[in-house]
Image 1: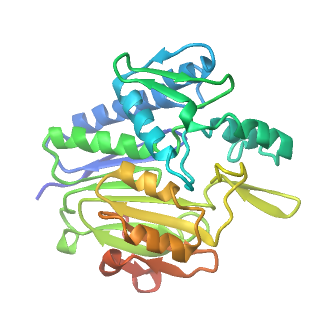
Image 2 (image 1 turned 90 degrees about the vertical axis):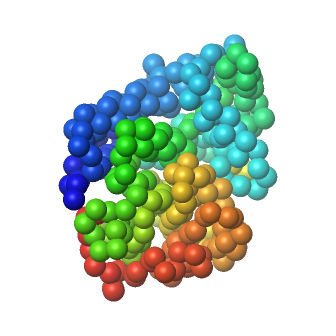
Length: 320
């Protein structure tokens, strides 16, 4: 029986844990780490020297040629950002920089500033040239922010790399964004155990545990980044229509799917809906299951995930 080997490091502002069972695990994990560091360097919206920031710096001036992988993610992001009445918008950068939630200087902007920035967040103003692989932002001051999608995209690419090396069992954990490969080599039934954060508790206090194989678990919640002003709490998930954090009864949303990028997309699209409407919406999406945790603590599950979810009171904790 192969043993699991892992590597732990910090990147993308979070803790990363890569775990695989393979004869050349050490070399494969080292290469995966370098790939993730390269992704961070090129895709970052917070590094003035990244390729993405070169696109943003040329907003309203000229198109910028980008790497194929960045072009592909921007194209995917734009397609989903154009969906009506959703919360996913990769052109949201100006608002993120205005509010600074999760960063030094977080503040409550005035209404005029919010409206000014909103005018710079129309995804239709992202012009893509498929042949030249260029990205052009039509208005000066526009900024693409891929933070809502990047970790899922990176996880899928690292999984593809692991599979190309013959890895049949492993886990990619990018700061709580978890992608599983195959079955666990030691756990009963081959199930991996993935904890679901309790939004009302400190980190690592769980609401429940998912036990399954070969798939993605992506969680988003209002507890991840927030600040308080005048007795009111503001979180980092914005409504692209209003420019303010979304207001709903949802505290946390976990998406289970095959692709981590799909998980990222569906944790963003419908966060503004009520919990009941969100559950109905996600129940109609083939290949997507969900755990919805409301602000009152109630947990709602799509039918397909119920056999794999154990409330923490009955769950057995496991690191894997």
